[in-house]
Image (tube, helix red, strand yellow):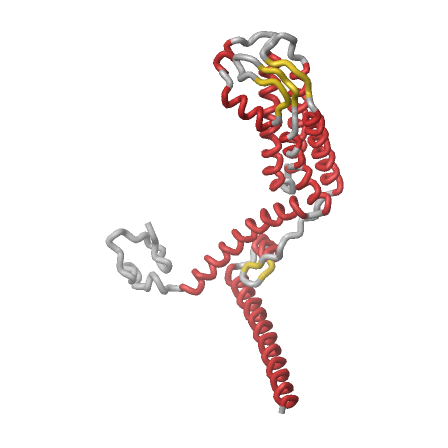
Length: 287
């Protein structure tokens, strides 16, 4: 339930009129200037915290030249996936296939595969096939996860988060390739790695190396200056911590806001004066 801004009395549903039944104050208009200022203070503080997050995201993506390079190398592993990754022969329970396969071919094969039969025949011999497929899928998903997590790269735990993702991506990629080479002969999947897999591993390593280089160089996050009632927000927080009274703080805000408005008026007057002088000069020249 709402309360009267003057007497702080709790209002009931029946107290729907604009006038407080307890103190007679106009509920809507009472001290409206101060209440608007309080709402503005809250909004400006919230905007400050939001702006800090935006500034960190900008820095993570474009804060330095290396950060821009990282933006490219983080998506670079997607390229080799469309090249031949393996040269393989497949038979039932997988769809028949003989030749090279890219990620598009793997997607089509997985769409038509009989996974019930595959997982019902799990053994030491079939384990490398299943492990290779699962690890490859996880490494692919981590490319997307890593790119998304770049938005948090300049946050307090950004370095640990990125390194963890990089290491897991590299381990899953190497594990998938190693598991595929361990598939024994005579299985429903057989073959060898193709050049796309090696390029994929190289781009994953390159992405990790660039990530390390970016964190070693460091990124300076430049925060946009924010104000609360015309006071720089850092100074505002300091004044609040030092216990300055609300009345003194509000008086300082009005002082700063008036000074800002006076400066705007001065610049506006100078601009109008310059434009008028320019127009007068054009009239004399044309006359």
